[in-house]
Image (tube, rainbow, N blue to C red; front, side, top):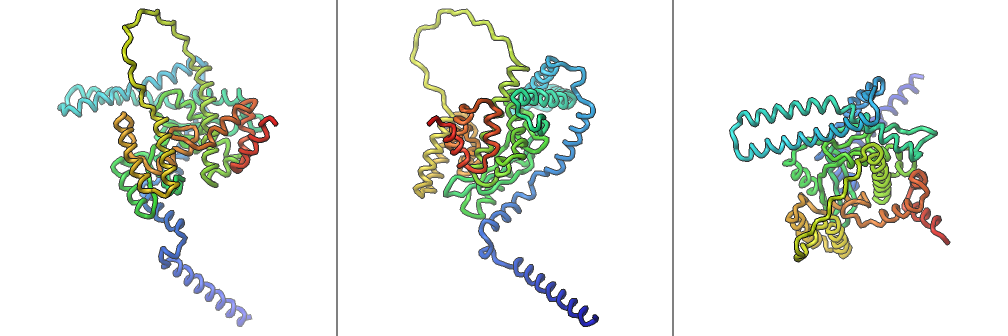
Length: 424
């Protein structure tokens, strides 16, 4: 027995030495011997790590607050009209805060001495923010209820119930670092960053990532984040918020279905997921706006004689159309292998957008890789968007559309569904 134990101990020591040797070998391998995509991801992760978004802590705090609101609803004693009135007041207060902040900025930009006026404005903002802090959980609960009612009305149910429940939090969502290869427009890498990462740091992070390979990087703000509860940007118009709450809920719904499971498989499935969420979000948001926030139609203004005819003014700058034409030209240049020419063209176009009043900080492959995920969005040229819109039009209801697309696991599934619905 003792000899067997000695042999067993010797075998364990041998295995341990082999394991230590293997670990040492892996740690000392040159980067050229590691798969290039792994090496890049590790390097990018290390660059993003100091500014990475701490999702776990946010989740714990937010879920606890939503549990408290479920136990004792902030909407007790409030009917539909009073809930809508409070939400309107909340958004009006947001606009008031922005207005006062602009006054302070104007005063300071004129190098005015910190006097009674600025102090009074700061005190006013503090008061407004205290009011917002009190109203915020009530406004969130009201919007959750309103969006939930529209989803139920559209029969977007699971086993006869709304699942998952609509829960969101007004917050500043994280920033998103997106990376694309220089030679083609596709999302190569992504990481979420703290929302308070200073703008002055963005360029440094992007440059550090780009030094890791033939890539282009961009940091962009996002309007929502499909955690649960979902995050939604606080400082935005009401109609946008309603659509975004429904958009982000759709992502949480799809987590329980094949389409959501395959979100990260490839760019096509990412685009399908995002476009489906946009279609549902826009329809539900419009329903909520009409049902709970409808304004009586304004009386038509009396017709008065107009001034003499004059030379028509030039058409306004069409940002969406200009960005789409830019994307098409860039795709053609990249397909021809003219990477440097494509980048020079994008920079020239960016300057044109800025001159037209649009603050485009960077226009590169990563910009289009990020915005191209939304096939109904700005600069979208992906045919997936029109195909999903066609499928929605051919569906008998929004629920019929969702139940069809939720089973997709590839672009081929979308193509097959359209063929099946096309009259022979």
